Image 1 (cartoon, rainbow, N blue to C red):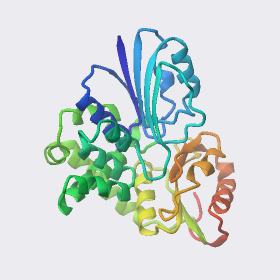
Image 2: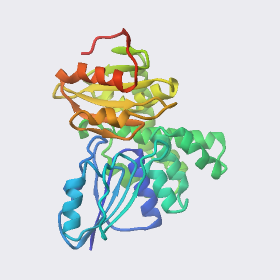
Image 3: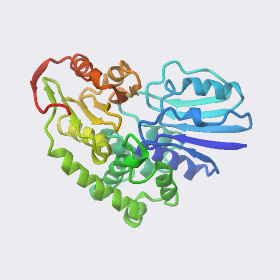
Image 4: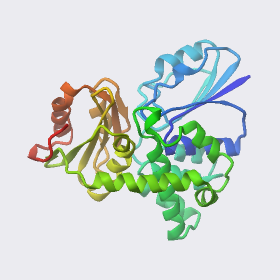
Length: 329
């Protein structure tokens, strides 16, 4: 029987899969891509003699492909924390789905494996900007502050690599990154000895310095919107910049937009960390939008919908425009 591992290319998806395969080694074909490439189940061949593990992509977004696979006798296990909608009941489908704002897919896998490879769950949680959820896991392993910081840095660096609108924006394809990482049981060893881990960290800091020099395009009473330039570094840094803004101002919402090569926008939204709700609802109002309650995005926002998005952002987080800053490109 042929097996397919289908996973989001960000830190959470990679760390979730890594935990599973450390505990349950299995030869598989990998299907993944840039973070916003989430309609991945459609790439799995519809064949009865196969099985699939899905990690960190929305069931609702992949519903049609999921039902087609199940109809042809494909056995599927599904781990995720994004909006799922109605979950099908089928004897060949096992689901581990929870959409609470303080959970990520790596943590769901950690729970499923009863903590067998928890250090990687901590990396995934920090990568998903869930520091408050990662901390108790770190305490359960009696990690020192310096060790916690190393795992946080690694998680943010893995996550940084996944952002981009196309593979050319990334420093390394997520499948190659996972193949490199899978040789390491210990994340501390990976961070210390693997050149790609160090290269990602250096590039992340360089790109963040450029982002921190920008002014917001719109500032509202309860949140800010940044529109970054049409450059590869801006698309790479979009997610971790949004996470940074959320941590620095936990009572405010944030949106970071980057200009796609085609001229429209890709959007990352962060609800206030103090009240992490509404991001997915906001993004689902737009075609190609989705995510989770605390952090969501829109893969393609047409230029003529930018003002509509700003208005919806304002209304979602129950605020009104206060001042405006930089002009969107």
